[in-house]
Length: 214
Image (cartoon, rainbow, N blue to C red; front, side, top):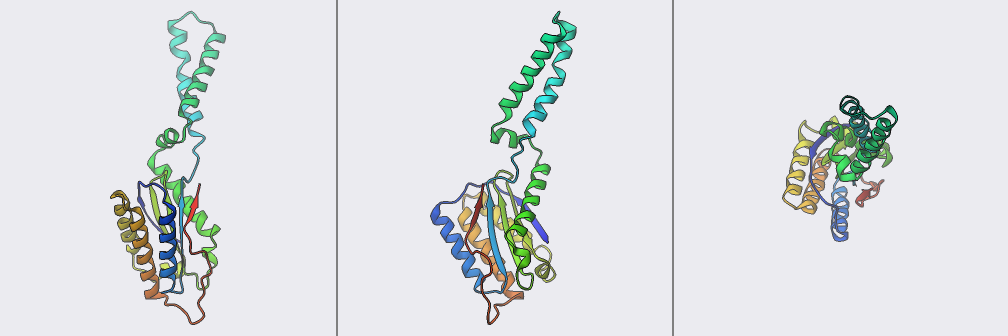
């Protein structure tokens, strides 16, 4: 699969927005034999390893000033070290905090990995003619991505998906996420219709509704 990505800041949709986006998917698929699936994930990874990792690093430095500048024995120092580890780990455990601590490159890697995972989970790789397209959003990672199967990627000019993602992220940045999604879906549908017009017996193979994941 081929992917293009961009950063986003967004909140989840209202029920009315979900219905509008699902309707946009249905409308776009009427014009093409391709399949479009839209997935919005709250986050692509829990990053539960981050708080204990940071806690362990901080705790490693705790004994040295205690050894050189106090008269404490090894057992009290060890207990203080454990307490610092536990306190730092607990303080960093809330989702917004631990997600903020992760470098952007790592978050993008996790988001891209989940996009590819969803491409497979949603069976986009099994569509007739290999014409599946996934529009994937990961909220916590501020990441948007289009993943297209090989039959589409072979025909779509380079930069097409990036322009659609750029327009989507721009709309989201202006607080117009639903409008951005509807426009992105229409743009994807137009690209598919150009190269993969609807067949005489074409039927929708995959769900047309917006898929929201935790």
